Image 1 (tube, rainbow, N blue to C red):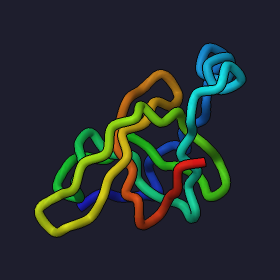
Image 2 (cartoon, rainbow, N blue to C red):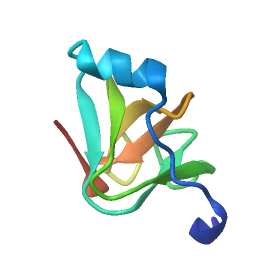
Image 3 (cartoon, rainbow, N blue to C red):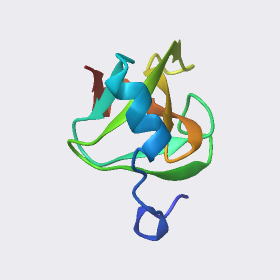
Length: 90
């Protein structure tokens, strides 16, 4: 099981901030949540999204085998997935 305490919060880097200011859509965490390597809880967590912070939305959304939607995001130089239950596109 993932240990959220040991994972770092991911933040947009300078290059990503430039993309956001250029009009890229973002995903905002509505509470602290994992960013995972794939669209589902069975995928490893690569970091955390802090409540109120944003990541770049790549435009891709997938639904896992339990019916949960996941947004593909780019943040902190990494690409991962965040569950729509804990985030929203802004």
